[in-house]
Image 1: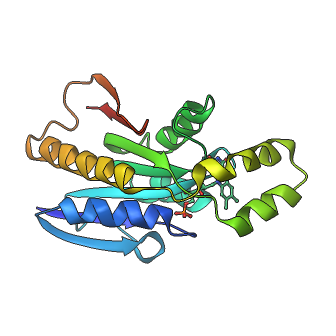
Image 2 (image 1 turned 45 degrees about the vertical axis):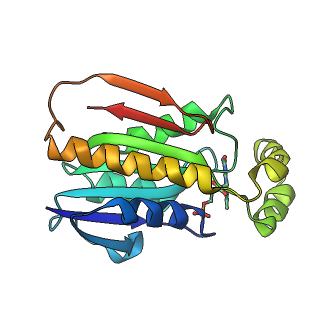
Image 3 (image 1 turned 90 degrees about the vertical axis):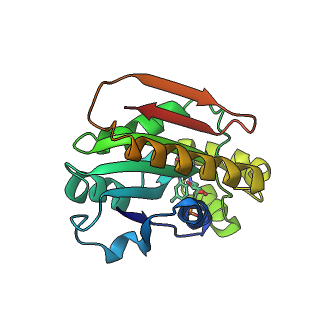
Length: 190
Ligand SMILES: Cc1cc2nc3c(=O)[nH]c(=O)nc-3n(C[C@H](O)[C@H](O)[C@H](O)COP(=O)(O)O)c2cc1C
């Protein structure tokens, strides 16, 4: 079995999650930047990661899911600046999931990632009231994803691999939703 971890990470948070997931994979594995991948045909399963930008999947992540992940067995991992308990987060994650509608989605992991100071400055200058309101999460996001969240990412990777090995993808559908101690969530639709 060949497993790919592919990610986009302009400020490094999603990359940390990608590397944690990668560590847990005991099968043949590769880790690549999203821009370097033209096709997932060579892989049996792909973990795809990117950040939330402007209340939904970053453009490159959305396009990758829509064009290259169609029909493929995948799991998503997403980082965002707000805490996992933020009231609008499920909507934004829903947009990520919608972009993966053509893929066989085994599960989805999300966690908070630090908003880089230069990003906060530019969001602050944007003039968009919604983006301005995001600036209020500076302090809470500092240092994220922390070790606790990365441990949850590794647990997610193990769970996904168990599912792949059990070949449950594409079978019966049920919704499992687990909220862990840090508030990071694992959502599973298999
Ligand atoms: C242009 C831009 C827009 C963003 N919009 C949001 C947003 O709508 N909601 C949110 O929670 N975080 C938002 N963020 C914060 C990032 O999602 C967060 O810092 C993420 O962990 C960055 O991942 P990366 O380090 O892999 O790039 C935004 C960041 C940027 C640069």
